[in-house]
Length: 150
Image 1 (cartoon, helix red, strand yellow):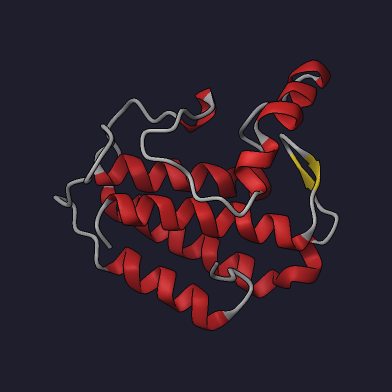
Image 2 (image 1 turned 60 degrees about the vertical axis):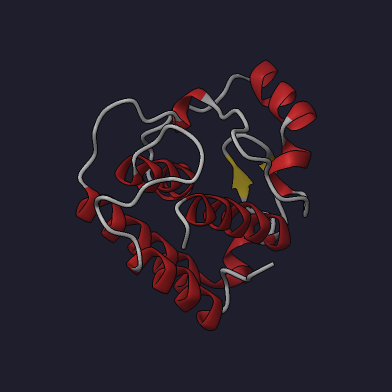
């Protein structure tokens, strides 16, 4: 598993992102490449931007019970796995804007370092270790970059 808190691994992710083009086609799924980039940005928006509603206590309990192990566990995501409603990107997005946003989020996470994420509260899962944050970020990026063949 790559480490989003190490520059070399972030550079690998960014190089893969830079291999994408506005007309890149997915190997599976229905998202366009711009929608996929916007979808990946949601994970970071939940950390850095106050634009997504916090789940209710009951919903957070359900997410921790049913989804946390999948999201922060070592096992890769299967193809065409379901996602939360806030991650569904229905409208068209601008490829360059979404690409630049994602690269900026990756760099911001690297600059903050893993210590900033140790015990940091997740909107959906409560407090996570820096290892769990890394798995969540890296596994999600790898899954969707692989979806688009990079």
